[in-house]
Image (cartoon, rainbow, N blue to C red; front, side, top):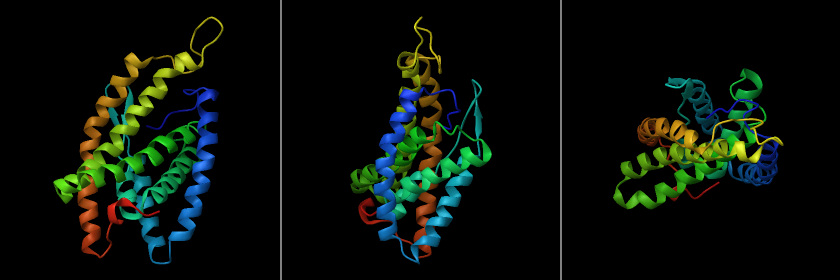
Length: 220
């Protein structure tokens, strides 16, 4: 879901920047209060993992790509706010240093992948815990990919209506919801399976070395 520059109109990315600024200020303050000398290196390792996962683009029919994210892993291990801040930094670095995604689209991607993805993982994990630990972890990973993908499909699909010229022609992304909903969501249904499995395996591996997830996803 790395959206290039020129796909989103200023009505979209400026609004996302304003909303994101408030959420980033809250998130950074919470992270600074709650991360200690023990947790910080672990956060760095999982953030680096998320960076690598997002850099590995898997081509799909139609000329686009998909990738894993590690959002649920960060959110369930260190909390939703920490995951949001870390994923935002990853997206900014990838766009600014490697041209992966556009600078103007970073606020939108951060809100959808980082904020919505992280808190979706936390909420789903809490809701599914009664069905078993692995089911809850897998569900958290799957929904952390699919829900942001669905919202990104809506954001892209609305661009022709949001940013159009006086003649009604789209100024930025030209395809409507009839195209984006299928093109974006369907591949991510499969990516979500891999993300769910990755979340289960990594959380279990972390537990074996003494790193326990946040209780009910409730911290940071």
